[in-house]
Image (tube, rainbow, N blue to C red; front, top):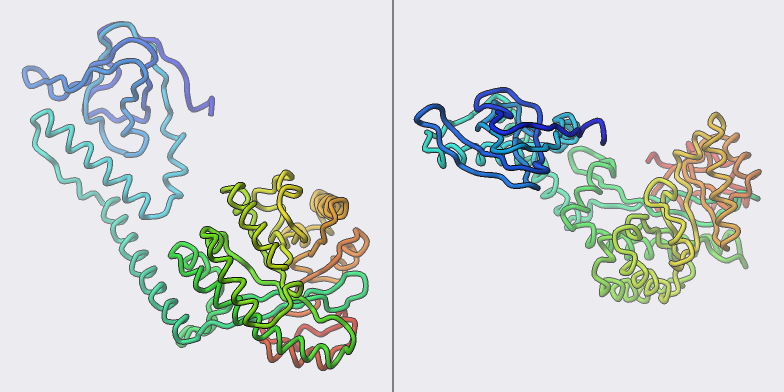
Amino acid sequence: MSEHIHAREMAANQVIFREGEAGDDAYILESGRIEISMGEGDAQRVIAVLEPGEIFGEMALIANAPRSATATTIEPCTLLVLRRNRLMKPIETADPIMRLTIQMMVERLNDASRWKAGQPLISQGSEAQRRAFAEVRELALRRVRTERELRRAIEKDELALHYQPIVGIADGSLAGYEALMRWNHPEQGFVPPARFIPLAEESGMVVQMGRWALERGLQEHAAIAAVYRTVHPGQPPPFISINVSAAQLHDLSEIDRFAGIIEAAGVEPDQIKLEITESLMADDPEHAAEALGRLKDLGVTLAIDDFGTGYSSLSYLHRFPLDTLKIDRSFVSRMDHDMASRLLVRAIVDLAADLGLQTVAEGVETEAEYAELAELGCDFGQGYLMARPCSASDLRGMLAQSGPDWRGWNAAQAAPA
């Protein structure tokens, strides 16, 4: 940040900037006093006298507009100068609602300054504002439409779960499968999760959707496990891995609902693995510890999803009752050409082993990646090399056809993701 801030010494009665001038800097008054005025000559009016610690000229940081007032030193002053480019990139990349809010704040404050100085108010109506309004309007309409359709999807059973097998790296045996939510839109077909899961998170619908996923997943798991027992008599059935949003655990009473759903499904809790994102631990560690402890009391196992891409503090690995680390696919896909990624995967696998945790590598797509994971000692793998996500009925069919080793399974036989 040092290149964006520097000090400036000024004598008394010096103009720092004039009304109507272009400006890119804002200032923090470190010592001395500053007079802020509007108008010229006999019409000039002092509207404020600033003391040390105050900021002025801040509109230049967020608005490409002339100065709305004149700033003059009353006595010798030391100023800290803030450069506009310190804030421009975050503002330019902000969402349209944020940009519009900032634009309106600037115009409202400018109007207030003009009114205080007895000057007429000026309607801006800039092209930038019109574009921002149009962009926000389109964004709002799109979000409202998608949210309405998503609520309808929950009510009309347009949501579905697809399951992606998770296999043991050492022998290729089926260890479990992850339940992945899909939306079969009546007009658009299958909607990618990236288009509706974030909206569900922001709107709070993810809590209701999460309950549905747990209930439907356990119902379908019971049928899948029955087929598995027929094909592999005497062997324990695979586990089902279900994602749980941090929003679902915000209210600890939701865990009581989990308990009721698990009991009603008749599935043994040790067959259930709940995948939690790292953000839960980062946002509120104390709450996370209590929530995860209560989940663990249900008898389920707990996994951290996409390990290494988020908070990734080593402190929570021994603080929270975790069982599994899921290694993000971005590390797995780069192992064969990026030594740093390979070293990171090795470090995660070794650390997990030392802590008594299991590891699942996500996004395994090539034989080379599989072989490397086996060499590093990773426990499980999940990816297109073994199978794509598929419906519960397709997975039952795959179980009836497959042998004990899933490494040679033809992923093309599975339904597309």
